[in-house]
Image (cartoon, rainbow, N blue to C red):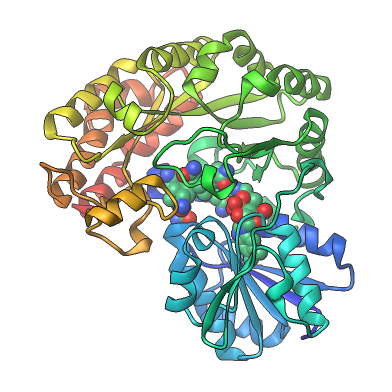
Length: 475
Ligand code: B12
């Protein structure tokens, strides 16, 4: 096998609910940086089809001209087929190319993926950096991959799963993501609705995993219910690096749970010393209880550039929150939204419809609750049985999954009916949520002329009706 690796970010549908955006190929940049450091003789390329406006055919042409020994890609559940197609294209160009895929979807369903997509040679389960490097070393030495931890692959017609790999203890030891490998494109990464078209959008990891156990989420099982954070200094250094070296301004923290309680104070004082305020826009995802319990700290982060916080409010119903094993309460959600609003931080609440006992009435109650809550922005989603979640197991066992097409697992498509609502009706209920929240003319006029710039952007986006029209088409 030669010493060339090609990472491919395939063409992907964007998530129309959040408008038009172009994200950096974050995972590939993280993996490429590690390979580059550990195996300096490797020749590494990243083909970002989104930013470079490449088609599926172009991928084949690129594989042919670069002639890599390995082709790798990554994606969420809704991108599973796109990832498999990359492997298929590589194999069509040259069947000796080794195809390596990873990420939370393939980690959860390795058997199924290897059987359905024989063009995938190796699936890296769980944390990727060390396994990928060890696999490359093993293949270059012509050895058998069975001794590499964290892999699934087919050998002589049998699927082999090597033992899980222990997690990296200190995330500070990871290199910075390899934005230098996509330097020509960095100016293109943007998130129009959230930060404007000309603000460079970058994604960075402050931590990995989550210690909670929400029944609809894949993250805790993917990271074995652990939470590891980079140090406050390392996080601030990385923000500074992205900003100084590549002009990164709108920085989306990948952390599923920002965790003000455990690291807020330290991180705030570290970021404060860097004096980023006017240059940086930080986006966090946080739990409502954490925000509600740390109002002063949350407010302070506004001073260091945190201008948008997204929270999983999920439901108005105690029973549903219990079923989700979310560990938050409705009063937490009210308080958290109030804390953000009073701190001039854009409050973004996420809601889920479509649990088994949801009815038209209960979804109507959720809609009313979401209006009453007072968040600047609400996103409604359909309960989606992602492989690896508790829901997936229950839904599969009970035959609730009516749509097995992973391309639709984007939380905007209804995948399961409820006891009283058919699939189509769940889809219609989702549309009603958006119509009620964003289809009202007086509310739209107020939004479009709001004093808050972010609210104006958002309402302009929604008033354009694209989202409502697209959702309507799903019914
Ligand atoms: C940033 C983000 C986005 C951004 C940008 C994505 C991007 N391209 O950078 C935006 C806003 C666009 C987005 C959109 C969506 N997202 Co999103 N997103 C995230 C978030 C917060 C971070 C992703 C990330 O970069 N993580 C950091 C990387 C390093 O972690 P990782 O992917 O697990 O990778 C490690 C290993 O898994 C492994 N690995 C991964 N891939 C590969 C590949 C190889 C070859 C190897 C060797 C190893 C390997 O190695 C890595 C390092 O150890 C995650 C949650 C999270 N914390 O991961 C949700 C998450 C991935 N998103 C999710 C979802 C559902 C979506 C949407 C469908 C809708 C929505 N409700 O948000 C859309 C889909 C858009 C689309 N059509 O592709 C879900 C996916 C669930 C699932 N099973 O599919 C997640 C997990 C959130 C959640 N908790 O449910 N998202």
